[in-house]
Image: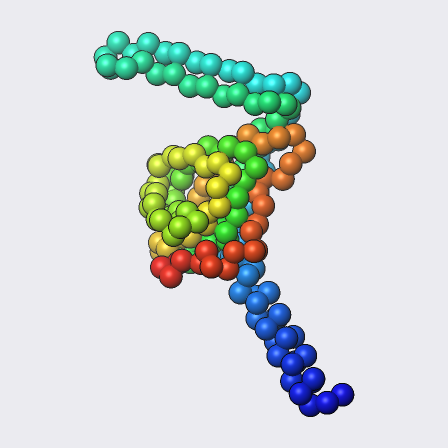
Length: 169
């Protein structure tokens, strides 16, 4: 084999290995990860709640709708300081809370927009690409409820978008 061909093949191999490492976005620092409950609703979900709040200007309403059977999954997870979920997305809706014993976390969207959540905060996530990083000095402790299509995994890692790494992460 000519040395020029070896150089080209060797360079392609090194680029492929480096590119593969750069593209991967694994979870790092999840030292506790327990699925507390998995349940299935075998038909469409159409739930609506209305609560009159006499001391408020507006009443409270909430709705959950699915087309098709759904899995309801409850997960308890802890992420060590410096840990990250890696870039990923979910095939459904999540309801998340940081437990009272949790350090704060930074949540990044695909455009590197950052929101910081602290112990006691709750939020929702959908199908958009994101990363969660524990930049605090304490463990981050999440309790998560997933509403996903029956038989579908809770998260999908995204290894195709290396450009999505944020400089601040």
